[in-house]
Structure formats: C-alpha cells, structure tokens
Image (cartoon, rainbow, N blue to C red; front, side):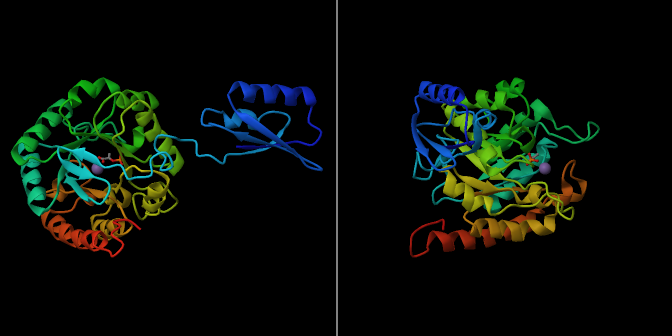
Length: 342
Ligand code: PEP
Ligand code: MN
C-alpha cells in the first residue's frame, strides 16, 4: 500500500501514523520528494482500514497495491479449485450444467423436470424452496416441504441438488442439500456468510445485483476465511440503465474472476437476461468465455410456472442447448494448449 502525504504534514501526526502502522506489523519505507513524501507499506495490509488512513489530515492519497483478499486470491492458490459434489467435479477442466425450475411447485413437477434435465445432460438439479420475491404477495416457495421434494427428486435421479438459503435460521433444513445457494440479495449478508464458513459443504455464491467483482470476492473470502473452501462464484447479471433485459450479463466477469481467483465461476443466463430467447446465446457465450458451468431455469410448462416463467427454457429448448454447449466445452477442452480456459 502506498500512502501519499500532504505537503508540510504535521510531524506529530506523522509520528502517530508511523507508530500505528508499526503496531500493525508493517514495515514502512519513507521516500521524501521535493513536494511530497510517500510511505510504502510492506507486509499484510488486508486488515488495514484504507478509508481511515485516507481520512487523516496529513494524508493526500492512499493506493492499495495488494488485493484486499487472501484466501480466494489466485496468488495464494495458483491452481484452479475443483469442488466435488457427490463425485461431480466443478472447476478445472470440468463443466457442469445445473438445471431445473425457478421454484419447486409440487412433487410431480420437480421429479419430472429432474428426470428430463438429467436425460438432456444436466448434472445437478436446481430448484428454489425459499424464494426471495420482490412482492410479499407473490409465491414465496414451498419452503421446508420444497426441500423434501428436492430430496425426493435426488433420490429418483441421483442428481445432486442446489437450493437457496434466505436466513441462518433455515440452516438445519439444509443438512442433506448438496450445494447451498446464496442469492444475489444475500451476497452481503455477512453474518450468514460467516455461518456458512463453518460448514464443510459447497456454497454457490451469486453476485449481488449492484456489487463489484471485488465485493463478490470479499464475500467469498468470508466463507473461505471460516474454513469452508468450497465456494462456486456465480455471475447472474447486474443492474444497469438498460431495461430491455432483466439485468445486464457481465460476461467479462468470468475471465476477470478466474484471473483474480482460483474458485470456479459459473453463469446464470436466466436471471441475467430475464428472457428465455436470450438464454441459449448467452449460455454459449458464457461457455466460450471459460465459465465452469451454467445455472439454467427450465420448466415443463413455462406459461404456468409460479415464478420466472418468462425466462424458463422448455424441456426441448434445454435439450437442444445442452448439446450445443457441449460442443463448445469439448472444443475448449481439446484445444492444443490443453487448457480449458484462455
Ligand atoms: C434464483 O436463482 O432462484 C434466484 C433468486 O437468483 P438471484 O439470487 O440471482 O436473483
Ligand atoms: Mn428465478
């Protein structure tokens, strides 16, 4: 970290700052220029409050050189993290299709969709039991019963299940869930992230709709710092001025996150676009951009879905998309460099 001091800074205040930095076990190199003095801080600055330093009277500017995260950083862990979910690998060279309805609606619905998506090539089943809805009058999900139905679908198909947690108090219900999803609205629910850090279970962490990549990585850092190293990052679109699509899919997030972090990165083209017609092209683009998987909403009868029918693929559409995605994934996996990701 570099701290640029104001001209003629008060010596007593500077001494205080130097002492404080020393107490934080940081080495400080002072460079005095004609007009300005620069302090170069050497050591672990992740715990330093950059805004506090910036607010000091004697400080003109502060620049972070080191990333503010450690555990999730590729620097601390150069190899891709590969997470095993019931023997299914996510990350590295493997690519997984996670598919299913926005919400679990009935036993028949979730079981028949699970069988169909499995036949089409999905390797995990998604389905919301606890639903974060903008309106309190919208369908709120089948809650605990929804999780039981997902477990039935898992028993039937063998597909591991991915479902969203909305509050820490729901955690006991998630014991048999294979992957716990933290939705966009809870990405910065730090108390929940800490609690999930105590588990030894994969967490699918979605990017908040107004959050930067750094904020997403810092949220993942909460989980890894707690000891749970199995985090899958998910780009699901962010809010911009564009209103044609539900959100704006930030595909550059995929290579950017993979450069910054060793964690697997998947893309949700359903919530990013909000339109079924845009899901196939964006899925192909996400695979080409190096994503480790896709999270796609699929419904046997989208027009009558209780939630997000407008963005759900039909079973036929999913079947055809799965084949095309596989084509791109195989191409990348067989590139002469042997690298799945550019
Ligand atoms: C979902 O995947 O069901 C969901 C609610 O997504 P998001 O948190 O990205 O809005
Ligand atoms: Mn949805």
